Amino acid sequence: MIVAFSVAPTTASDDAGSVGDAVARAVAVVRRSGLPHRTDSMFTTIEGEWDECMAVVKECCDVLAESSPRVGLVLKADIRPGHTGEMEGKLERLEAAIERQAGR
Image 1 (cartoon, rainbow, N blue to C red):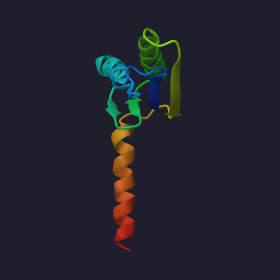
Image 2: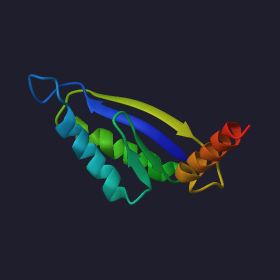
Image 3: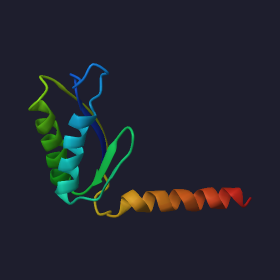
């Protein structure tokens, strides 16, 4: 499965409203997990089995809950048993389709 998620504390760490330090703690959890992952400006995407992915998401939430009374989580999952390498595979198929359409 592929899980794209965003997790953030509801309280900022400074007057400017930044939650960057807290998000960095969550991304560190993802990196330690050993799962294939990608982080962009809005979401972190991981790939693995259901229990592996959900354990990482839970740990990220738990880490943020240590310093915030409330944590927000947005999650989207692509559940496709028997498929691996889809973080890259889906993009490769999309690029191939774009190339085919451009060649028309």
